[in-house]
Image 1 (cartoon, helix red, strand yellow):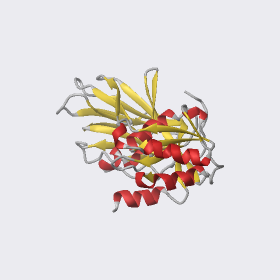
Image 2 (spheres, rainbow, N blue to C red):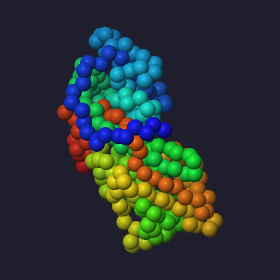
Image 3 (cartoon, rainbow, N blue to C red):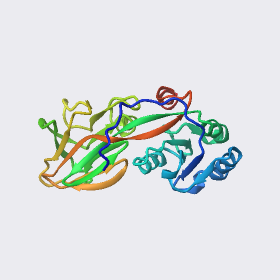
Length: 275
């Protein structure tokens, strides 16, 4: 993993015109229809080269929903190439352009009319293994109908054991996903912090906690006979057997989200959650 320290998250001003663009599409091609061909026509009209590798591009255009966006942000994490989403999913909170507006939105973006927001990540360590989450790292019981028992510590100081269905450690990006459904607080995009929330805790005292870059969270499986799954950005990653622990902290690298000029976290929040 890179040791580059992320800068304070911020949005950059409008960019230079795009010369090379890469494309990532939804895992079900039927969801996007002829979007790729429409994109190619816009790029050709502007003299923009469509390349295969994101590392060779100025911009990675994502045709899909939030799941495809997360895949793109992971793919581009080591390249710092910004990802611009065209929504062909159900919610598309991370996207910036609706599928019906593909041509107009891409015209603006390829002309440089977009900003880039740095999205902090969270790193989970299990022994010598590390995994990076753009959205969240979640612990859940591996046995249907059995409660997980998790001890949680911040900077080595125990805050007790909690019987629960799961624990969510979410970045600001992921705070509007599973964390929001579980009653956790919303963190504005790019905020240099993360949140620990419990899913259906069997306690009146297990409250969400917002932490910052200096903090390290340890989650230890205290159940005598119930393993827990480690799920990273919606995908099962590994398992914690009884007694095993997971350490989590903010990552050194940021993902880079491109937004059309004039759009914001707050406008997307209003459109998605208050409409």
